[in-house]
Amino acid sequence: MIKQRPAVVVLAAGRGQRFKGSGHKLEQVLGDGTLLQRSLGCVLSSQLPLVVVTCSDLAPVVQRFVAARDVVVLDETNHLGEPLGQGDSIAAGVAAAGDAPGWLILPADMPQLQARSLLDVAAALDQYPIAYAQHKGLPGHPVGFSAELYSELTALRGDDGARRLLARYPAQAVELDDPGVLVDVDTVEDLQRLRAQMKKDHGG
Image (cartoon, rainbow, N blue to C red; front, side):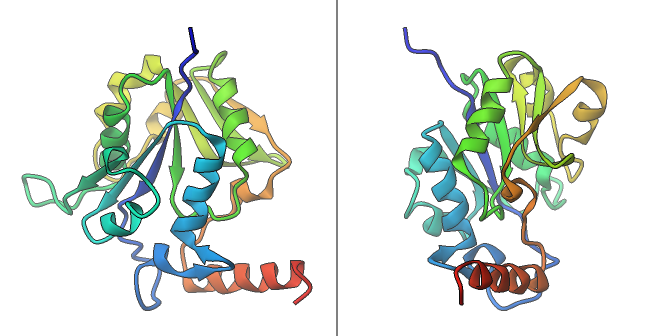
């Protein structure tokens, strides 16, 4: 019998309000692809099951790289007209991969992450209810949750994300030799800094 592996839930439904450039943050070019493309490429390389939670504007872009069955499209607001937040995205993604033995939550703006890091955090869920990537003592992404937390994950709403679960349950740091677990892109300045670093690394 083939052992099931945790699924990666990629969060790509955010509005990226801190990014003041033109166009959606996740469609910005970085190196040989966009932020979204590079993040998805890492997950696909890991060969872990994948669910991408996104918005209607980005769904066609996501579906260039990911099968439609693995894409969850969220509305911008709930039935009360309130904007959906990260908690709603996590809940939708976990529910869509409800038969997985755990879930790795990964923002879609992590273009430097290594596939090996996903596998190492996934492996830690065999022993711990929560495990998260860490580099040089600093916490990063992904954050993994075991199947026992399904009900609480699918009940998340709003912008709170999974912070209260991290406060309630023992969480194991997985120290990784991967600075990419700490690198996300929130602002235009973040993107410019990363482009300059990559150019320097490649001798440009």
